[in-house]
Image 1 (cartoon, rainbow, N blue to C red):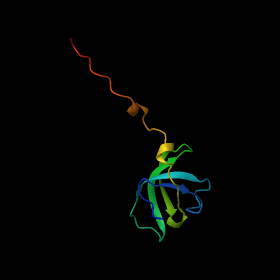
Image 2: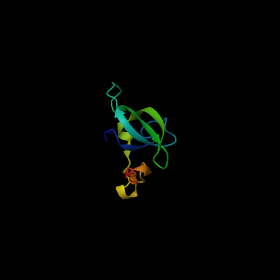
Image 3: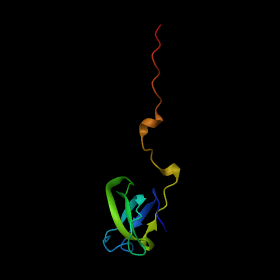
Image 4: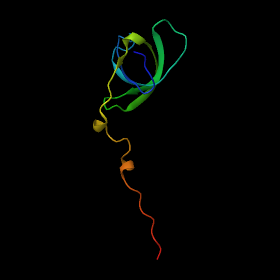
Length: 95
């Protein structure tokens, strides 16, 4: 798979021996830097189990070792900002 911005990946030892402990990673960008065949530099965020970004990282991985994670259906995703669901207060009308 070729990752793209926004993709969520499960990064394990299959991608690089440095990932003894697997992690979830949300891609910000794929660099076009020259590397060994089949290897990529990725910028993104390490995610916790809830899907929240906990650390920004740049990682060097084997493209064939990356595993895409399917995103939750929209109905299961929690709102990012609860304030968006509230209406604005109406302006007071002067009498």
